Amino acid sequence: MADTIQIELSNHSCGAGLEYARRQSTGSAKDAVLCCEGMCLKGETARRAANLICHRLVPEKTVRICHGGLLEKNGGMRDLMQQANQVLILDGCGMACCSRLTKAAFPDLQPEVVFTDKMTAYTGNPFGIDEVPEAEIIANAQNVATTLVRKYYGYCQ
Image (cartoon, rainbow, N blue to C red; front, side):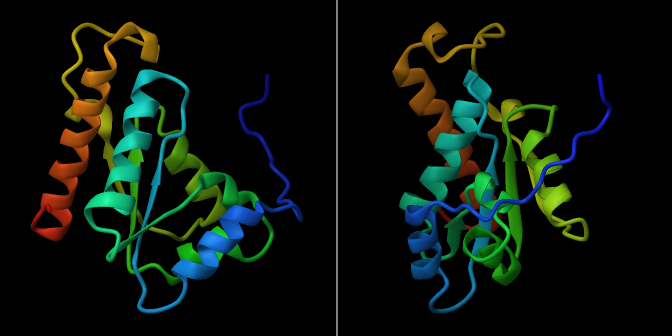
């Protein structure tokens, strides 16, 4: 098995993502927020927290970045990353998948990386989202989001 993989950037793009990026690129620059998109509970919690930060808690200061958009050759999410004031990555665990993908796409970037699994209160070591009640996932994601908004923006609505 290879120790590294090489990924070719794509000429294909997501129309909805490009439209979102176009809307977000008007006005002043915002902080870019990326996250783990893993299928496990840790990835789900990080994803929900990132969405809460960008779409509910501080949308005027942040823009949500789809890390799949970093694989496009031009425009969209890559442009938003380059315009960002700072970049915040919410990695769900120590595998740091989002950090590694972002580093491959932007080798000189120095993002702020947070491992959200260190901020959650799940009992045991559950893997799937079916292993804990939905209310517990919501509460953990909300806690991660509000903690980070307080830390980076000094308040939480």
